[in-house]
Every structure is written in structure tokens, then in C-alpha cells.
Amino acid sequence: DLAQLDSQGLLRRVHGGAQKTKLSVEAPFVQRLTENAYPKERIARRAAALFEDNETVMIDAGTTTEFFAAALAGAARCTVVTNSIGVALRVQEGGSRSKVYLLGGECHADTKEVVGSITLEQVTRFRADHAVLTIGAIDSSLGLM
Picture: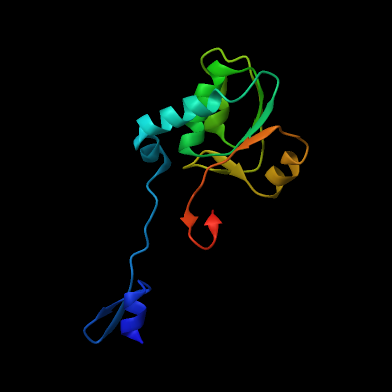
């Protein structure tokens, strides 16, 4: 049984028993902002060019969405709805003509995002033309997560 579980990566077989496999831990948000910055900027610029004035865009919290928010600020005059303090600030910086609605809720310090039942209740008040969401993982059977 241990050999099979080890081969599946669910544990590590050792002399006399087994050990838990190390779970990968995501780096702090501020560190992830600098990782792969150039590709994130390229994605952000190309995506921002797809939006037009007077559209409503919902943007969630994430490092790539922060780059997108900065690019959108110079590309179009939109209404932005977000749960991310960082996204809200990046849209507003640099003379953006966009209107920003920052949702309320429980604040997570590392990611500077708000979540929870209050956030969900508030988001239902808006109708968006588009949503820009981050992808935390891709699984071959579950898809995007």
C-alpha cells in the first residue's frame, strides 16, 4: 500500500513507515508581484486593449490582475468593481478616468483583498460586461480553479 501511495505522490515511503509529502506553499503576495513581471505586463497590456469606454469590468485580486488594472487605467474609461485594494489603487493611479467601486468585507492583509458574505452581497448589486479573474491552479480533470 505504501509503495502505491508513494508512486502517486500522496506520501513518501521511508525505512520503517511513511512521511507526509511537503505541500507547496504559495509565496507572499508582494514577492509574487515581482515574479514573472514582464509576462504579466504583456498579458495585461494585451488584455486591456480589448476593453472599451463605458464598459463595466469586475476584477478580482491577484498579481496579474494588478498589472491588468494598471494597463486598463491608461486604455479605457470603465467602471471597475473589485474586491482588491491593490486593483482599486492601480486603476486610480496615473490619472485614470475610470470609476472604481471597492467592495467591502473581511480584509486579508497579505493579498489586500476583501472576501466573505458582505463581499458576495455587495457584488450582486452590479452588472458587468466582463470579469477578469485569476486562475489559482489548473487540474486535468477539474479544469480551472
